[in-house]
Length: 176
Ligand code: HEC
Ligand code: HEC
Ligand code: HEC
Ligand code: HEC
Ligand code: HEC
Image 1 (cartoon, rainbow, N blue to C red):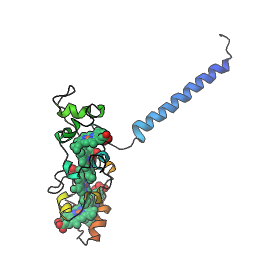
Image 2: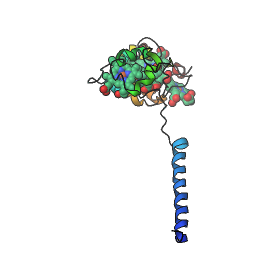
Image 3: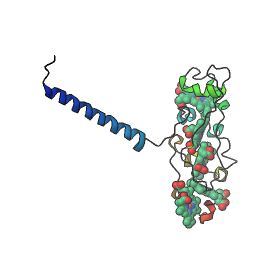
Image 4: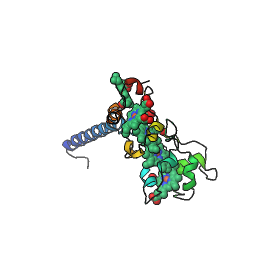
């Protein structure tokens, strides 16, 4: 018991050091360098469950009501979500933040609103108006093929379409 050869102790120390180093590298990668740049949303909402024909089959405008008459597309109120989720997945823990925000009949209710985080906003110096684009006949999916992973819109993506439609591309049309 007490006469364990010394090289075992050395091996143990090296083993522990190596493990500490590996844990350190993983923590560093997770915390600083390589964490995916997805914001933390108040609850794990996915578009596909709501827009797929075999699920809730909702139109984009049911939740983004101003995309046809304002610059911003708008966000749904928690009341819109509760209309269904009082009944659908009513006791699912993923929806607790919703009940906390907007369901006074629920024990978790606190009134703390859902704060959705914008994923890829354009700089404030750019003017982009949804209504100008939807009025011209563009559909949501032309620019948001998969709203669960919206890619950042680049100047090139704007110009490609504007050029193909022979729209003037002077800088001050888009840059304020
Ligand atoms: C049930 C309501 C609902 C429906 C229906 C819905 N959305 Fe959303 N949408 C949301 C919520 C809530 C968010 C914020 C959470 C997020 O970004 O995932 C959001 C976020 C987005 C965003 C990302 C905004 C950003 O910059 O972060 C885009 C783009 C979007 N929706 C487009 C669409 C399109 C296109 C459709 C139709 C195919 C659609 N949505 C249908 C509720 C909805
Ligand atoms: C028209 C009814 C309806 C509305 C309105 C609605 N949902 Fe849903 N929701 C559903 C259905 C149907 C499912 C899928 C249930 C299943 O998979 O069994 C779902 C699933 C979910 C889930 C489980 C994860 C997922 O996406 O599959 C979450 C979280 C959720 N909804 C949040 C929300 C939020 C937040 C809102 C408001 C922005 C909202 N829902 C509005 C019908 C609705
Ligand atoms: C011509 C391309 C285009 C079309 C068409 C379009 N969008 Fe967008 N959408 C954008 C761009 C670009 C942004 C980023 C705007 C910003 O950050 O100011 C955006 C942002 C959004 C956002 C988040 C910011 C906000 O305004 O609330 C939502 C939600 C959204 N779009 C939904 C929709 C829906 C729903 C439709 C269809 C009715 C639609 N979009 C049609 C290009 C488009
Ligand atoms: C899929 C095609 C498409 C994309 C992508 C697109 N646009 Fe447009 N945009 C149009 C069309 C078509 C019009 C013309 C509407 C009209 O004439 O009424 C327009 C008009 C505009 C106008 C109004 C111009 C004016 O002077 O009246 C601005 C500003 C604008 N777009 C900015 C942008 C920005 C910024 C982006 C990228 C973030 C973008 N657009 C992406 C098709 C597009
Ligand atoms: C159709 C719309 C549109 C037109 C026209 C346009 N830009 Fe842009 N530009 C954008 C958008 C959108 C961004 C932001 C892209 C991003 O954040 O990734 C941008 C970004 C830039 C940037 C990067 C710095 C910044 O402000 O974010 C420069 C520099 C720039 N544009 C210069 C120009 C010049 C010079 C012209 C005229 C020759 C021009 N742009 C015309 C839409 C446009």
